[in-house]
Amino acid sequence: MITLSMVRTALLIIGWIAAPIAAQQQSTLPSAPTPQIKVETNPDSEGIYHVSKEVTAPKLILSVSPEFSEQSRKRKLSGVTTVKYIVNADGTVRNPQVTKSAAEAFTDKKDRAAAASLDEKALQAVSQYRFEPARFQGKPVPCWLTAEVDFQVF
Image 1 (tube, rainbow, N blue to C red):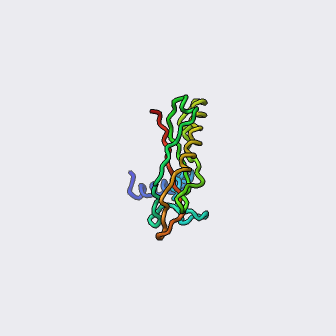
Image 2 (tube, rainbow, N blue to C red):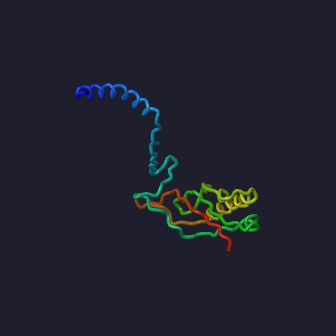
Image 3 (cartoon, rainbow, N blue to C red):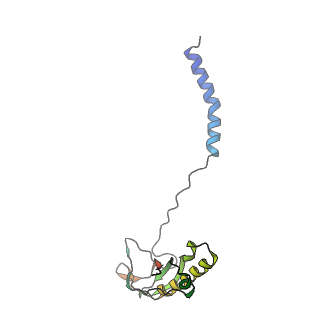
């Protein structure tokens, strides 16, 4: 006959044996990645601001349509190039750089080369944009912006 005290003793013994095994298994389980929160400081280390509650976004006053490269026109390619740039305190653009190439959407070598030529055309177009500058405490300040330049064949 099994008594209540025998059951309790058996459970205690199982608990003593199982606890180190469970702890060992938990230590080998992968942990969830720690979320990376990117906090933009204003201004950043280069003296460039980021749009925030305190910094108003620049307003586009002149947009230039990008031209197709000859390669992309011949291959009838469409695509999108993402460009990051600084809008100066006078509203001009400086330091445009491609952050996502139009070529990323293509696998064919010739298509990729033609689509990559669109990136240079996107940089040329963005360099000609003009803005009402960003403002911080009522004063014009340089500010980072990103634009998607869309190339569509009609």
